[in-house]
Amino acid sequence: MSGAWAMEFLRLGVLALLGLTAGLVSGELAWSMAVAAAIALVFHLLQLYRLHHWIVNDEDRNNPPDAGGVWGELIDVLYRFGKRHRKRKERLARLLERFNEFTGAMPDANVVIGPQDDIRWMNEAAVSLLGLDQPADLGQRITNLIRYPGFVQFLRRGNYSETLEFPAPQREDVRLSVRVVPFGNNERLIAARDVSHFFRIERMRRDFVANVSHELRTPLTVLAGYLEAYIDMVEEMPAALRPSVGHMQGQTARMQQIVDDLLTLSRLDSENVIASDQEEVSVPGVVSTLREDAEALSGGRHEVVAEVDSGLLLRGEAKELHSAFSNLVSNAVRYTPDGGRIVLRWSAGPAGEARFEVSDSGIGIAPADIPRVTERFYRVDKDRSRATGGTGLGLAIVKHVLQRHGARLEVRSRLGKGSTFACVFPAGRVLRKVRRVGVG
Ligand code: ADP
Image 1: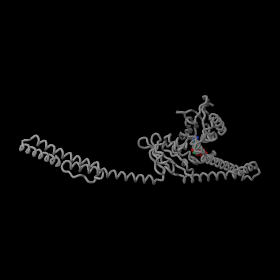
Image 2: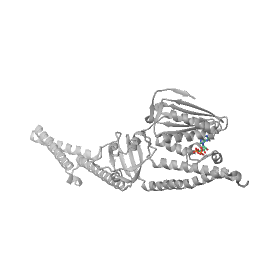
Image 3: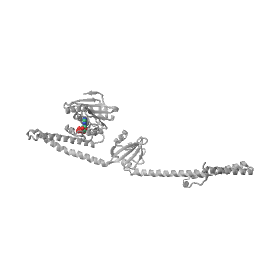
C-alpha cells in the first residue's frame, strides 16, 4: 500500500475514533458517528471541488492545488501527465510548422489525391505551376481542374512508372513533367516538376537535326542528279574512274535515306504526342501492299505469306502506320538469308487489342541486343546493316509511331532461328467491320 493511502486510512481511523469517543462520552453514539462521517464527506467533496476547478481553468494549469494524501498524489499525477501532453503537442505543432515551411519552399508542385481523384492536400508550388486554388480546390476532382487530355488518360492507366510531360495550365511557356506515386490508403501523390529548361534544349537539338537534314537534302539531290548523268556516260570515262561512280551513287543514296529518316523522326517528334484517331486505316489493304513490296524487295529469294483478318481496322494516321510496318517488313527481308520464310500477320488479340506481326526465319537477335534495337543508330552488325541499305533509324521510327498510337512493340527473337516483331494496338484504336480471314 502506498504512503498516501496509509495516510488516508489513518486520517479516517482517527476521525472514527474521535466520533466513537465523543459518542461514548455524550451517550449519542449514532449522532457523533454521523457527524464524523459528514466531516469526512465534506473534506473529500472539497478536494473534489478544488480538483475540478483546477482542471477546467486553463489559467491555473501551472498552479496545482495543494492537497495531501491520495488527493495530493492524484493531482500530482494529473499535473505531470498534462505537462507531458502539452510538450508533445508543442513538438507536433513545431514539426507541422517545419513541414509546411519545407513543402512551401519546394520548387516542385505536390498534390495528394484520394481514390476519387479528389484533392486532399497541395503545396504552394501547386498553385503557381498547376494553376490550382488553395483552399478553394480542396475536395475537387483534379481531373476537372487539369484538363490536358493526356493527363486524364495517364491517371486512369495506372502505370505509375512512367512520367507525362505537358504544358502548364494557364502558362504555355512552362513545360511540366508529372509523376504519380501511390501511397497510404488508396491515395496518390502527384509530383510536377518544371522541365522547361530541358524541354528547350531538347527542342534546340531537334530543330538542329531537322535543319541540318533539311539543308543536306538539296545538295544531295544535286549530287545524285550529276551522278545519274555520269552513270549514263560511264563508258566515256577513264577505266580507273568507272567503279567509283557506282560507289558514289550508292553512298549518296544511303545519305539520302538517312536524311529522309531523320526528317521523318523530327516530324514525328514535333507533332502532337498522341496521333489523331479521326482516320480509319484499312490495315488489310496496307498489309497486301506491304506483301507485294516485300516480294519485290526479296526478288524471289524468300517465301512471303500474309495472314489477314480483313474485318479489322485501326483508327490512326495511315501514312505513319504504313511507314512503321514497312520498316519491319523491309528488316525481315534484309535480315533473312535466301530461302527463308516471312509471315505478315494482322489479327485480333485478347481484350480487344489488335496485332500486326512480322515473323521471319532470319539471323535473329541476341537477347542482350533486343532492348537496344529501337535506339537511334543502334545496329547489331553495322556492316550487314549498311550492305543492305540500312540507316539504323528504322526501328526508332517504328517505336515513335507506335508510341503516338498508344501501341507497344513486342520483340521475340532467337539467334540463328528468326525474329517476330509485333505491334500491339489498344482496344480503343481498333475497329471491327465484317469479319473474314484470308490467307495469301
Ligand atoms: P537498320 O536500318 O540497321 O536495319 P533498324 O533500326 O531497322 O536499322 O534496326 C536496328 C537493328 O536491329 C538492325 O541493324 C539489326 O541489327 C537489328 N534488326 C532489326 N530487324 C531485325 C530482324 N528482323 N532480324 C534480325 N535483326 C534485326
